[in-house]
Length: 268
Image (cartoon, rainbow, N blue to C red; front, side, top):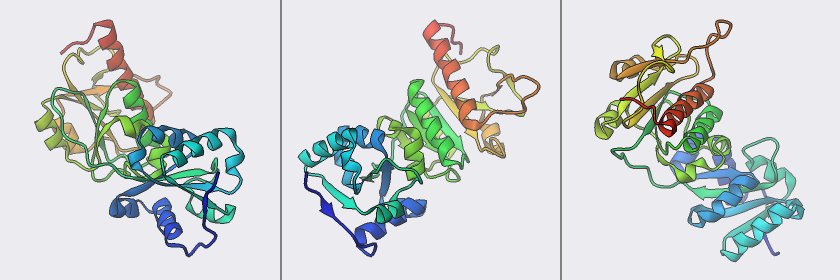
């Protein structure tokens, strides 16, 4: 296989990639991001229109999986750029990398859809949590995601890595207000709140379209979200545990919804 090779950190492509790796605002401004790792590189083969180029750490092509992926990208006429280890490390979004990073175009903003389930993230700032929630959402059958302006940028490299490809199957609105999402979807607004609410397992809910709201790691859901809530729900925990990580709590709620619907016990 023949690759383009860059050996200078001053190369414009490297400067751009380094900026994308380090600053979410650069991703927003440029409409580009970085997807690191074998899993995402393989997933993106199904979405080649999003891939601008592939960065490869020198020697990583010896890995069988990576070699197979590279051959497919080259057959699609997508540039593969080989980098010395030191330069590759400067653009990798993670400290330990498999040696492959795709530079991708961020898709157009999603659309508000009626008659479907939604998730709204209210100030969730940790990229890992945002990505994990996207992955759990997809696994539970919810593919519409909206985020408040205070959230971690949903297309940042760290969120992409944590979501493990879920982005490419979801309708994502990266910055929106809850009131607008609720009004235009017509969904029942369910707020998960560790501070109090109806028992998640005992309350009747889940038959119609839902709009789940999950709040920030430190502060929980905002007062505005509570005001817009149709029903506030609480996950009953053992008394020795005060609260759950927001991504864990979201997974519990979303799979309880899926369980109810699959078993036919969902209620309005």
